[in-house]
Amino acid sequence: MQRGRIIVCGDVSANMGDSMYDGMIFVGGEVKSLGSDCVEGEMNEYEVRWLEQKLNNAEINSKTPASKFKKYVAGKKLWNYDNLEPSERKGILG
Image 1 (cartoon, rainbow, N blue to C red):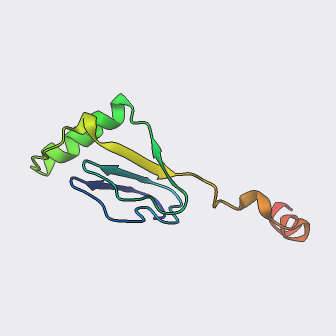
Image 2 (cartoon, rainbow, N blue to C red; image 1 turned 60 degrees about the vertical axis):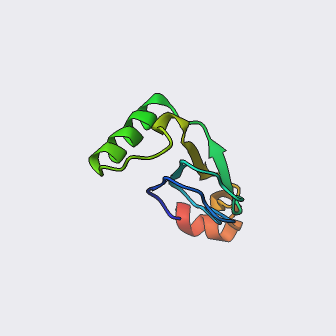
Image 3 (cartoon, one colour; image 1 turned 90 degrees about the vertical axis):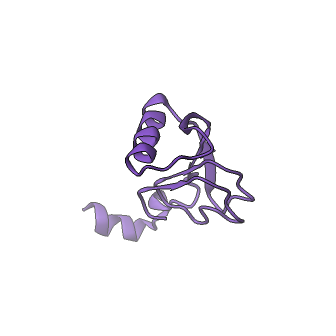
């Protein structure tokens, strides 16, 4: 996943969010296992309201209320911005 948001109202199979680079996955059911570099994040009130609005707009009656969904994000361990060789940095930075 490069970016964006995915909403899953039910359960998710193994390796959800594998090699996730950016974005968010909201899950209303159980997650069998997370893929590499996908971690659970904390949902804030803004995200709960956003999720409620999206479900309402799509006329989806989820068994799980938006406040009980779990949020998953990239753990950022696969990000390699600072791992450039000195010669590569010189070309990029100036």
